[in-house]
Length: 467
Image (cartoon, rainbow, N blue to C red; front, side):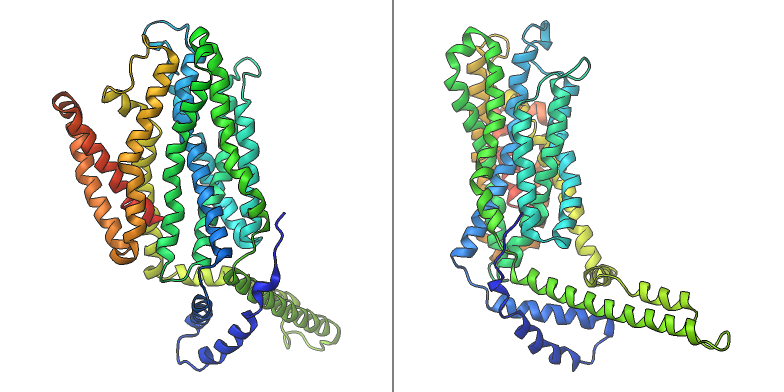
């Protein structure tokens, strides 16, 4: 599935030989020796890492991946609104032109459910099979399921379009989920320490462009069908399918580059060392098995030699992959485990607000009076205004937040930006939460300012730094 060039592995053997003698001569605990050796080998690779065309191409692929993922995630905002016109135009009262809450929630959380599974499964496969191989596979899953989502329809009684769309979007999320750990790993392995934060932030900042691209496409597609929509609202059925389907274009455009990407020198080094360690373990196992057979054939007295089962158990007990051993060693220490827990819990806490707001931005647009009248306006006019509202709230706060982080992360530091972001978000959400209606009643402009600042500090804060 992935075609790799082995030329980048030329200096790996020399790096390994040069560092082996240094590590052996140090008076350190045996448990830390392997980790220190690996760290020094990677430092040598960092010294030779320079920004070149090959790296720019890989960063572009990774950036487009996040743009594509954000588009697929947040286009559902617009699609859910359109589905209300298509399937509930004949409903009565407040239910008219509105998707019921249970179906609205179902199709909006589908990608996040798939993402959770995809990160765990595809992230692990990236370690075992290869970063770029699984990276290509995750994109192909996303392309196929995006197209399938666009053709969702009611199949049998009790299996309506929302359930079918939910299933396809869970599978889409599975593919997107692979992008998160693999993109972060690929970029970090190619970047040098002095610009790693900036490059990883720049790649992640492309998520903001995806957030803006979805409503732009919504405006263009709706405008193309405007007259036919105003004559028959059922023609919006073409619009939502096109908005979803067009989301596969960035992925298709970069698929060849993903297929021809090669794994980093870091990963090649680790894979080569793991293969050598496994070969050595296989040799040790063969020796132990030979000893076992010799003992069975030549033992003269009971109890003088280890039993065959004991010999075999020793061989099996030591037969663990090198990466698994060092992973366990590293995170068995609280000083390392607390970093992992702190990062993951911080990202979870942030994402509750991030996805809660961004998947329901229509509520905010309606609250500030920009959405229009759901029942009196023409469907095309209402949809276009909501798309414009999405663009505005993203450009005001969300997109600048990403890029402020890109240009300040190496100077201010990850921890400083994250703590500052959480502090500001705590204050802003307390004010917005407890005084929501009072602020809207007295000053819509004031509400917009506070909401914009919250969007800004989500990204000039924990959203980017946890990644």
